[in-house]
Image (cartoon, rainbow, N blue to C red; front, top):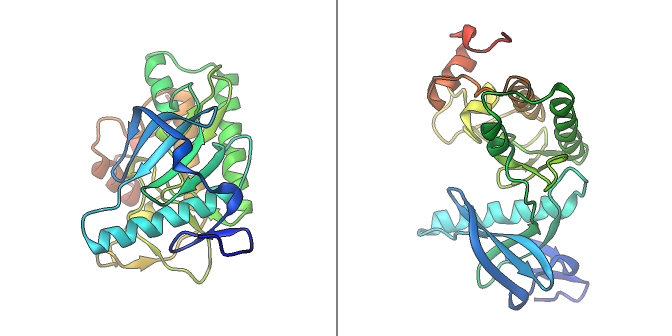
Length: 257
């Protein structure tokens, strides 16, 4: 609903009218990705080829509320920042489904690119170029007070020419605030900073403090992976990798050789 000042109310947040997507102009094509809470499709918005993220609403009042809040945060942050190394936000709508529309990058994920290259490694200048792209994207987020919290190769997308990397998926991103307590156990263990999941003194679901440095940790893991083209904590499950990072065991699994 138009509030009369150029903003549209979509439940828990206000969306600037310029970001409002009319679902009648969306054409949904084949599915190109799927996560725990959303599915991503290739599609068209008007005459533009786009990526369409459809967020599931959940099957209980609690899950519906959590997913709507998460959707609201993601849209707010995508509309707040623009950078050549961040996937371009095109718009969103909440009805009849929660939908986020971004540019479609056809180069695939950094994860797929590295897997296809194995057992070879990236040329050093290429690895450094990718690392600089990622660093610029993260710096842009941090300069706007945003923590990504899920920096990993699956969320880094290549352009069609495989020369540029862009950071995607703000589903777990949050605004950084010294007064805000944020949820523990967020992200993907293998690339997560230990303070995100080390809950020795916390009950499940309790809150804890951390800051933008958690992205710096994840960036370091990705950088190591770019240079060696090996899976971090290879041979370990995600939980074993988390334990190794948090309690400094199996240090031999993570060094340059």
